[in-house]
Image (cartoon, rainbow, N blue to C red; front, side, top):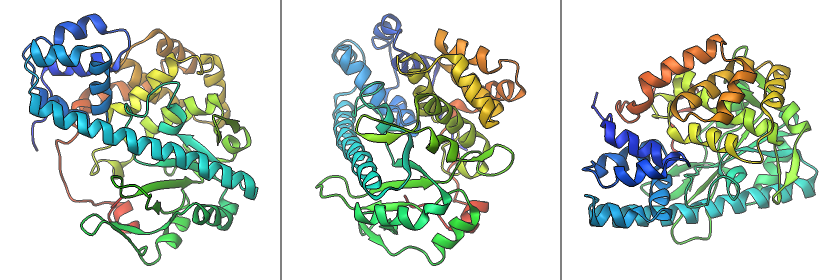
Length: 365
């Protein structure tokens, strides 16, 4: 195991970049002796490297870090290039969300954008700030063929991506069957955009929310039934977006399959919930608590809110946690787990193993 934990100053700086009310300590931190290479690597593991960069850029502190601090110019140039590529990729994903939503509406198919960048761009993030790996959709299990037709019409198909050849290869045998038997959703859909920089795009379709299996796995139908049309796409209702953001934290923290991928405690998931909770679009805490109870997901939602509030404390999150249930055992467990594991992303680099690997093979996208 590698010791990749950030030093105290580096941790403070990253978290200050993520909190909108931390300009004053941030201005002091960038003038100190900082391991900027550690911050960049940790930011990439946590999917917040571009948030950190954009916060420093927007506050004018990039120049301060370079001329008064010890930020190396070579590292800054690489960081800037990566941020610009990320903005291009995010814009492509936002377009995918619009196009697929429009195609599904025209075809009369229930296909709903469920979480992630496309639902948070504009109100919570700029396209440069948030790393976006895919577009997540919810669909009904009975609509598989219709969903596949919509995706095909938008240029998406099942397949495996060869990073060496930069090509989409045919899907693995039985991939679709195995996913349908597992019941959570469909294999990744891949598309090759007409773009000189971005080589492929990913769309995921899920039939269920919450834990991959067990008591906290529920059908997505209630969220689909409550979906709204806004910002040019069919998307989950505002209260269900809050639920989904909290469940994202819970699922990737507790499901073993995410550990080999180093996805358990990515800061971006906590930042999503924190920033959405601070936004004008977020419903009242009581509404979130009622919806979590209605879906039978109070425990997992409390888990996600408590973990976020522990790392990125704020009045909106405190109110949300109080409404959902601050004394819930899952909430207490999440605080313990996040404190133990937050800065370990990237510490263990192991081959892909486990039940999901046995079912579907290695993850390539």
